[in-house]
Image 1 (cartoon, rainbow, N blue to C red):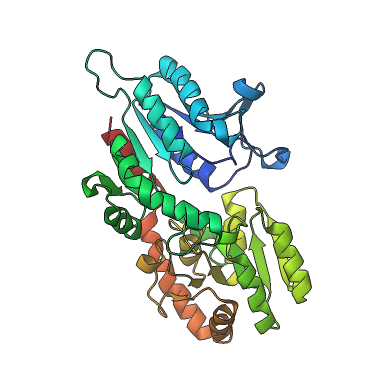
Image 2: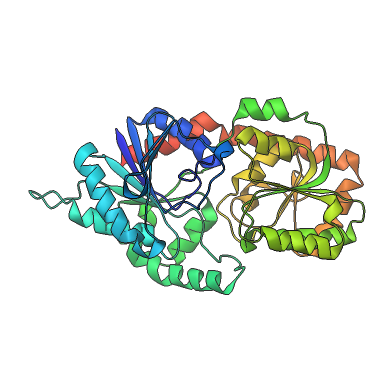
Length: 390
């Protein structure tokens, strides 16, 4: 069976390894071929981060091949043209490969879903009028919900509320990754019968087990794309209330320079290490395991996977109540919730950093979550879900 995936991810086309690449390495075991349509990559990817086993051409003809049978097709155009490029390239690929199912990663401004709708309309069976390629709309999290980090996220949340009920009717199924998102979508008028909860946390149990005894080098670890939504700046401010604490920041993004400038202005830069984008899943997990506490301070999320990985490693998590966290954390037993403010993070982090026994007990409890998200089984369930639509 062949899968067409319409994604907003730029990392693979830019030659970067990471969680998405790791997931595809397992997912492609269940498909004959996977074609991924994605936006134009960010310029000048680092050669050290390349994951491609092959790359050809430039612009419209550029293709990156990973895991032997996953084909990355980046658009040569800006996002304004993305729906039309999805239609054009999707038609070309479908004419050759006749994919049996498609999946669409959707979020405001909905260019992926709009492009998929155009594509579905153009490849109807002429004899029966039935859709030739069933498609699932994947809504991993709702932008700006429960909290927006910017005006644009507030607008994105409002657009989602008014658009998704009608938008989802054009697709055969809707995938969400947690109960909270399903509940919101149903409240907004999305048909519940179309929604399936298919988690997207995939844990490499063997790798996690290998890294649980990594020596502790940092008091706190933060790992995420460095954007406003992820809440790094309050974490940096919390260090002013934690005079001896050290922080490892894993990830890169639009606010990195702002975060580094804030650390300098607060006088804490000597206690913060900005590690940037790490080249492989092992490197990220090693970084997480090197901390005494993991901080997940997002305003909205789908999972996030990285917090579950920290728990599986036995690193207690201090998290906001977003995504899958309310389903995963029992407050005070296997993790601690925070309201996201610098003061609250500092108070709760200090309590755990000063109590080795409590932190060890919490870490032991947190590790038990690993059995719920075994990588091969979870990805097979995802693949079976997609195949069930064909």
